[in-house]
Image 1 (cartoon, rainbow, N blue to C red):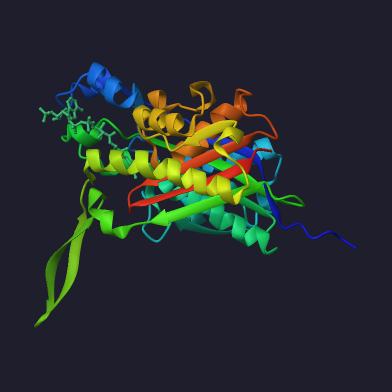
Image 2 (image 1 turned 135 degrees about the vertical axis):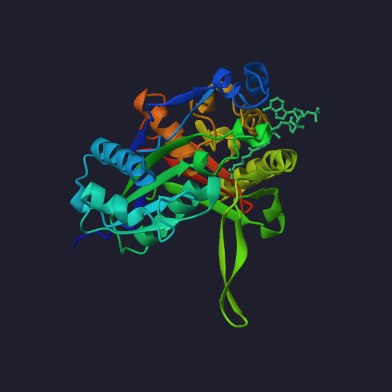
Length: 331
Ligand code: ACO
């Protein structure tokens, strides 16, 4: 009798590197800031910028292709593509364009929006389709181009964000290597971080209007988001570890959303994870939102820091507000 495979394994990772980066010094030509201020407060040195001819779906497809290659999985084997993004090329969704670009002709594809928690939420969503036996091969991509919606005159936000994409391939397996997860939302804190649609009224017929407007650039209460992150992220990781029957001492790699080095340090400190076990690449990419966890994971896998069998604690947090953690065994 054929064994039913309802476990989840993460078998490949990939990323897309942009050719154009903006340094802190260059940013100093745009707003009143300095390399010293940005590095001390955030740890960021430069960020990737999507150029006018680039698209979010190109970026996502490049990351997806590199993850498929590492996993030695053909595009036509993929059953499902989930694209975590808050900055699609098309508000109807960009995942189907990625599906077409990859030639993943059998795959159903959809977008998932949860800001900087998007990758963790997408990973957990994908796992549910696999655990119930419906899909066997899934591509989860996190891709964002927040530079599209950044106010480049606001020094409190524009220094933080960068563009990028990362991806993982999930395969059904007899042992479930997604060991535990926990996710939360609190819309009462929504005002702390917004990329909000602002509607104007457009008269249509007598007494009736339609909305006509556009999205407004990102606004953020940095101090509130910082406070939220350093309190909620260790908590959510501890809960996910509890579900996995593990403790913080079992964490071999901490792969957090790359928002701010000070947040990473505070979380690692609280969980007593030594700094050499914390994957950090925000110095080179900035905060790439849904892309940041798979980008950091992919770097650490490719330079052989993360090995098959290693226990990884990942956590995303951000707008919504949303936050979530996933504990998995790599490979
Ligand atoms: N360059 C120079 N000075 C600056 C800059 C800048 N880029 N930005 C702010 N300042 C000034 C401020 O005007 C202020 O000056 P003042 O005291 O004269 O008024 C001073 O620096 C301190 O500003 P604060 O806002 O208090 O700085 P803070 O220490 O809080 O650091 C930061 C700001 C880095 C944004 C921090 O609050 C933070 O990291 N918060 C978390 C943000 C985050 O991670 N957001 C992403 C979430 S993920 C998502 O979903 C997108």
